[in-house]
Length: 200
Image 1 (cartoon, helix red, strand yellow):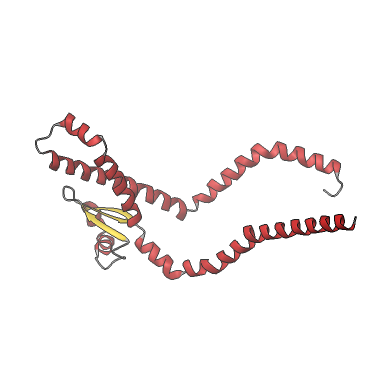
Image 2 (cartoon, one colour):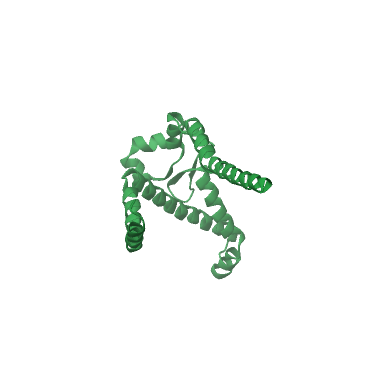
């Protein structure tokens, strides 16, 4: 009998220890890591560097005529980290594409997919240009311009939503939608709990 009660108490304390260990691993340790690492990563210097180096802009000649100071600042070779903020001018268009290297990486993946897939021989077979290599390079450059326009639009739309605090309305809308769908169930559960227990 004594051995059985000892086994039960060891099992009980072992279960408590495992629950505490799980709580520490899932809550306390990540919280400490966040508290100590966030100030190292997120500080005024890194925020300023992020604002400078994370841009997606497509500069055109009319834009530079209207906003010449902003255009000169963005085109200055000293502006931003050259390994993070990439600047490319298109030979057939009067455009300069300024973007973060991660956006350039995604662009290059898409261009490589188009260039190395079955699209190239299929399009060249349909179009039959006199100089296929030159014509295909112009097609790829046009595709890069279209991707630059799309990336700039997406970047400015996301930036506009974040700056204007519209994301608060999206979160509020999501919470309202979830609450409305669960409201009847919550009312039923609260009624059952109140009738079963006088604490509520």
